[in-house]
Length: 244
Ligand code: 6GU
Image 1: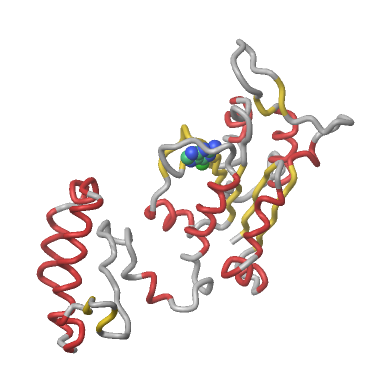
Image 2: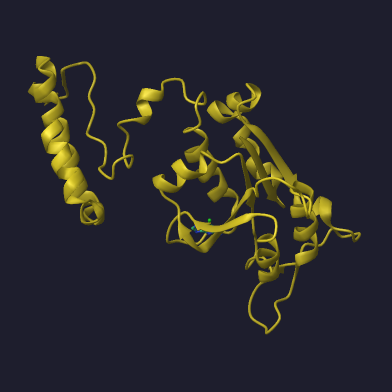
């Protein structure tokens, strides 16, 4: 997968070259490139923002540097499939595991990090000519810019790409892959500070273990994330009961 990030703070994205993601880049599974938006300014001060038309607080990112930066990633009139352009914004659709799965299938993802009060809306409009544009939020709170949100999304997406994670089986049972939260886990010692590991886990009866974990998942989800229970369809619950 090719992955481009455009930002006025490329140093913010440095951690992407560490850990599993960095290894994947070294192994050639990911082609990761961070671009400095200021490299596409043409004035002495490398200016990227200006005051908003209509007034109001803060500054708006100017269209010209963004237009040139996007053209550098995908030249206007280029042939072949459009890359997906993710525009991090608190006004976007909320990112979730389903989106991570879908984006992990893409050949080329581009992230356009806004700062200040946002990017001139005409940039997003223009970008539709060369990209599949998706404004995305990572939750209902406000960040200063898209960079931290991009780190979150890239980690969630990249780990789903074959070869990025050492043990692909760990992808199967994790929270949100099926709308139920993960069951609690325990390791040795069997008793610690007066607290014991649930007896069923010590026994080795695989069917009892599976049923115990399923029940814990449901209890935990109902207590912490009742909204997920509401989203869950009866069919998948029944399937789960039958298989347990
Ligand atoms: Cl993606 N960007 C910004 N600036 N703030 C956010 C966000 C994104 N998601 C939640 N808050």
